[in-house]
Image (cartoon, rainbow, N blue to C red):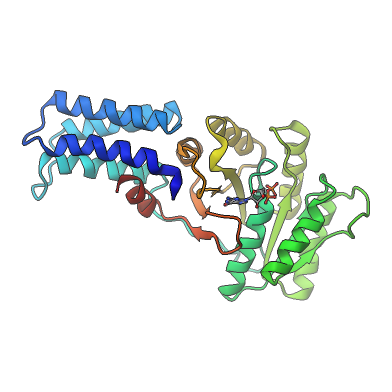
Length: 300
Ligand code: GDP
C-alpha cells in the first residue's frame, strides 16, 4: 500500500534510533514521541488524534508497565503498535447482517469517493460468500449514476434495481423504499443502496440521505471516504455522522500515494469502525479491514 510509505519510513527511522539505546530515559521517550508526532502530522493525521495518541504513548512509555521479554526500545514500539491499532478501531468489525433478511446496507459519502465502485465490489464479495445481493440506484442526482451502477452490477454479476435510465429525476426515497419490497418478493438477502454524493457537504443532500435512511431502516450505513481527501476528512466525516449517523467507514483509494492519515483519523474521531478497505479500480481490489494488519503495515 503506497499510501503509508512515507509514514512507515519515518516511524522506522524513529525506532531505529531507539534501538541503539540500552535503557530509555524520559528525554529519550520525549524525543521519540516528538518524532512520532511529526511523522503523524506530516501524514495528515488529524491534530486531535495525534495529541491523544502521543499523549497515551508517552504516558505508557514512562509508566511502570513492563514486558520483561522486551528491551525498552521494543517496548515503545509495542506501545505505539497497540495505540495505532486502537485509533484504527481495535478489533476487526465485521459487517452486521439482519436476523430477518434482507440486510440493508446504505452507502453515503462525497461524490467521487468511490461509492458506486464500492457497491460493485461489496456485492461481488457478498455473492462469493453465498449471498444474493441487490444493488439499488438511489443516486438520481447525476444523470449518469444509474447507468454507471448498472454497468458495475453487470460486471459484478449481480442484479440492480433502478428507475429506467433517462426517466428524469425520480424520488430516491421512494426508489429505496420500493427496492426493499422488491427484494423481499424476489428473495434477495442483501440490499445495497447507493445514494447521491455531491462535491461538498450539502444540506439538501444530507436531508435526502437522512430521509433514505429513515425510509429503509438500514442495518449498516457505510460512510465511504477517499484516502486522498486530506485534512478535510475529519470535518466531512463529522458532517456525515451528524447527517446520517453512519455505522461504519470504508476507506477507498488506499492504493494511491496520498498521505492517508486524515482518513485514518476518521475512526478515532467518529468512534465508528473502518469495515472495508478499497485498493484499486477493479472489483476485486477490496478487502475487510483489519486494524492490526494495517498497524503492522504502517510500522513495518
Ligand atoms: P462515487 O461518485 O462515490 O460513486 O464514486 P465512483 O465509484 O464513481 O468512483 C470515482 C472514481 O474513483 C472512479 O474513477 C473509480 O474508478 C475510482 N475509484 C474508486 N475506488 C477506487 C480505489 O479504491 N482506488 C482507485 N485507484 N480508484 C478508485
